[in-house]
Image 1: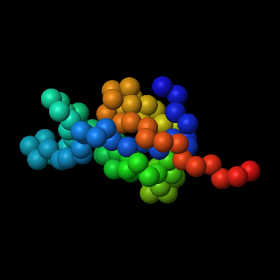
Image 2 (image 1 turned 90 degrees about the vertical axis):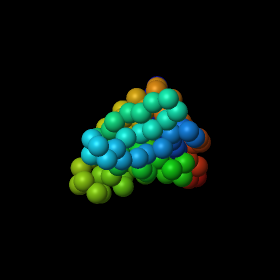
Image 3 (image 1 turned 45 degrees about the horizontal axis):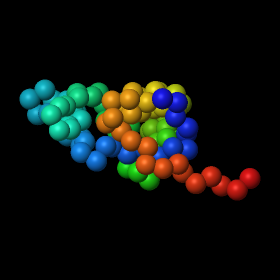
Length: 97
């Protein structure tokens, strides 16, 4: 799926982030399954609140890590969307030109 940077992602309504105490790793839980994720994935998914656009998520993480992460964020979210674990709830409003 090709994503627009104005798209606003959120976790699928039945998915939630958690932390596996045994494995000491973040995990994305959903009915009948779980996906272990790394810290970068956790940082991205924590910002998928249905309010921030992909560009805003990438900007926030770019400031935190001092690097351009737009392509990485877009690719990661695209994979999560393909697995139906993240949904695009709306496009962010564009400012008038």
